[in-house]
Length: 146
Image (cartoon, rainbow, N blue to C red; front, side, top):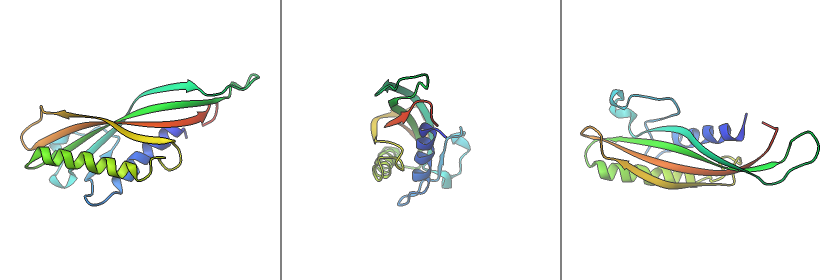
């Protein structure tokens, strides 16, 4: 399995297993937010977005192996439901960042993790809030290996 996939799985695992408060739903599968029950909030949809790769080293021969560095971006769409939507969104952002900061190496598969951008979606139905968080994960891998 690729480091990129291991990192994505780690994001789901650490958010899903966090407590105080506990996220109601953390998934990489699309869902219809209007069909969620109150117990499934706050909810987070995680998707792999852009990635930038560069060569760190090259080895000779026909193997084509070498060390590459990468910055992979994940989009976390967070949803809250209730009153005081702005407060709920702010609490969600803070909690996500706290959980991700507990292990910035994503289980040893990355060099660093950083929540770099937050965008609020104001075009939501009443009592529903959405915030998009962009998380950059820096990692290295050997070309030609899993």
